[in-house]
Length: 103
Image (cartoon, rainbow, N blue to C red):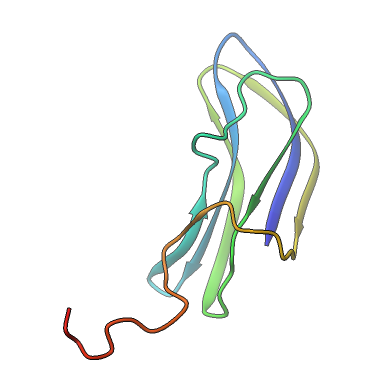
């Protein structure tokens, strides 16, 4: 899934980021808070996050992070299916692991 928005920020200092997390029963599958890709104080700029959402997922949470002293304006918010490459951290394996219990 892709979460995207166009963001404008103003202030003397600070940064802005999108955030998204994919959760299953007692497990976080993937997350992205744009660490290292956050937006500083800037005019209108597009930001996006792409995460894989396994069938076992129960919940997808998404929103905005503002760090420091800044104001933000948001436009063009979109949440849609995509085949784009994931931008986040995947916390699960696609295939079963350690089936012989050796580890």
